[in-house]
Picture (spheres, one colour):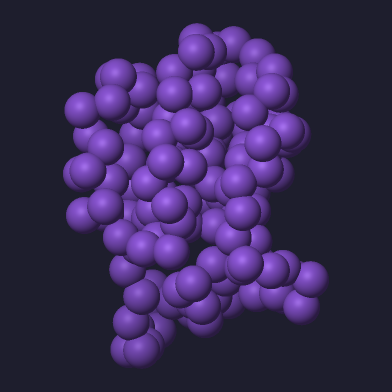
Length: 134
């Protein structure tokens, strides 16, 4: 189900959509989803999500609750999600700690109207920029 975006990390994002669900393999220390881990299981493609109406003219963060580009996510799931996204007149944001995997799909037409982001994690603490980080 497409949801209205409530976060402030990407103010231009209007909605989030999570067709791949489950526990993320990265285990990032700052991840808000870790609080829900007790009820999250092995990643799975929620086929019902591939029938939901994504509307038009939105900016959708796809996979905001899991890294859909992680090594444990089957390529055919990713292909199905990208194909479904490309059917609607929206812009999309895809984010990953594994940007090299995105390159396997970069020729897909959905990337003509998408933003690709990556995140980096460190055990270093920089107080001048990280004072309020989780």
